[in-house]
Length: 357
Ligand SMILES: Cc1cc2nc3c(=O)[nH]c(=O)nc-3n(C[C@H](O)[C@H](O)[C@H](O)COP(=O)(O)O)c2cc1C
Image (cartoon, rainbow, N blue to C red; front, side, top):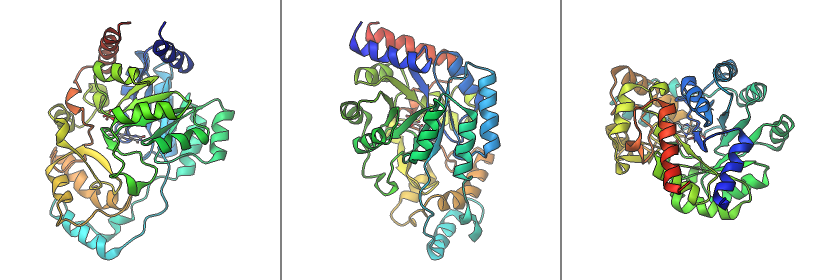
């Protein structure tokens, strides 16, 4: 058996998978049914718990475990320091956003996220086989508690330096996120997100060479060609986000799902327009306007998320994709509207054929 195949089969055996394909954790787009379908078909399910209260995390884990083999990861953002507030600047952003949605009151910028420590406790109590991090690393005491419970830590990284830091901090697996990826960029240093846009074809072999840990590849992988290429570049598994968002189990807003299906690689863009953290979305009218030189720069995370909430809600209600928060990776157009288990099998069978297995 080839060294590549041995590496991939060892990864699958270690994490109880029949298929080396992981659903990407996607906060706000982690419908339990999607993970149930993927895990039941031999892959790994996932939940991005960023916006979930502890009882919601517990409920999600119970539901997915109750209807599948329990192969899933829970994922959270490592929080940034509290944002610096600037009332004058926020007033400019509110005025700008008022042209795209309802008027934005000053207190909209006070938005907060759920309590990180309480979310971490809920993840530990849910005892998934895997917990993952993004935007930074877990503190040593939490890493010890994961290890005591036999929970593996998958650390999302977007540079070689981040991969080395994750290995040194005790991660079990690194997930190399190429700049093609949909959603927020996983950079540890938020300020560097736009400068360190490393594509997966360059990032993956560099990370594989830099660390001894198994490496999962993610970002722009959405069909059998991407999976086969990632495995040949040294990955032990491939992780797919946008590529599963059109499956019915994802329960995405129909306007978002439809837009993914017609988005070319050059029609996505990285901006801070929705949350204040850099993320890749479809280059809609709102995003293009927010990126224009005359637009006020977005407020920091999570202030901008609060300021855009009313516009996002109104757009969602109206099904107006030009103002909705439509995250998408550069391979969006490869996503199919097939049931997730069927799509997973198609992709894996196709990848095996390309690999000559
Ligand atoms: C809607 C959406 C939400 C996301 N939320 C998270 C998240 O909460 N945590 C995380 O680590 N990555 C998140 N990501 C990034 C994915 O985990 C993954 O890196 C990305 O989807 C891979 O690129 P692809 O979309 O081209 O497959 C999100 C991506 C999308 C599309």
